[in-house]
Amino acid sequence: MQKVLTLNKISPLGLERLEPENFTVGAEIDNPDGIIVRSASMHEMELPQSLLAIARAGAGVNNIPLDKCSEQGIVVFNTPGANANAVKELVIAGLLISSRKVIPAIEWAKTLKGEGDKVGKLVEKGKSSFAGGEIKGKKLGVVGLGAIGALVANAAEALGMDVYGYDPYLSVDGALKLSPTIHYVPKINQIFEKCDYITLHLPLLPSTKDMINAETLSTMKDGVRIMNFARGGLVNNVDMKAALADGKVAAYVVDFPDDEMLDVENVIAIPHLGASTPESEENCAVMAAKELRDYLRNGNIKHSVNFPDVSMPKSGAARVCVLHRNIPGILSLISGAFLGNNIESQTNRSKGDYAYTLLDLANVPSEETLNKVKAVGGVIRVRLV
Image 1 (cartoon, one colour):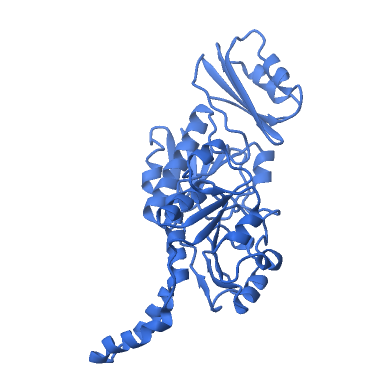
Image 2 (image 1 turned 90 degrees about the horizontal axis):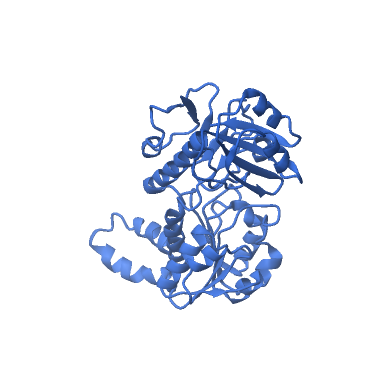
């Protein structure tokens, strides 16, 4: 029986994937084999020696100490794409409310309460103050064409927008998901220079922090509208406020508001609602639970952020899982420890400084053999499943 600790309220639909005959699941679990987490910060948490894996029910993993996990052989999973539709729909709403002044119009309409029969005439007289433009025919630049960005690009095109996309890491699979009439551009400045609307869909890294700043804003069209449903740190707040004040930016829609940007004219601050739908939470919980279950029971890795994805069908009497550093010659040393025990299947992949090897053996290896593998320089963790 393996134990899974939940650090947040997790959808029951997801936890159902962790069968009670194989897993004990709860918020009060000592020495867990696995953890499922949503937004709780784990940076100050002492990670128990028993911990094999963490599944983040969401895409971002800023709340998880990745370096510490990698050093201790703890596989960290996320759930890419599980909340993509929820975020896509809110981005489309952002495009509309940044154009049509819907929010201030609604607030103004509330002030007419008590005017009785005059309301109709007052509405007709005052509505011109809230006129806005249509998005059809306008140019939209999508920065980042992953799961969310691709959905946004396709949906915006279906609404009649002329869509440009930029992503230096676009995969073949990602490209195939895009409508063939979307313009892919090789340089981000082409997005900045061409587009009436820009939406950001990329991670917050040292290389992307403050990517929207005074310099990049100066290259954009006057009256550009910017959507940020990715991470707050992608936009320099001081520079954005200046661009809003002088009209360079007509509207900034952000799903990550902070004190500096609240109550700023033409800032539409949404309280991090991108993935806040029951469907999204269920999708993330189901995917996280499946990833965790497959790793704990079978040693397969899918959607890890710190170790390579490795999986293969089980064969033989036993499976040995080896997390190790990506260094020359280590694979032969690991395999050599099993002399006399036929290796029926073996697979290995690396990701940066780390690698993962699965070996299916004809016979269950002895404790002495497993200790030989553990003693190989660069081996981080060895597990028999």
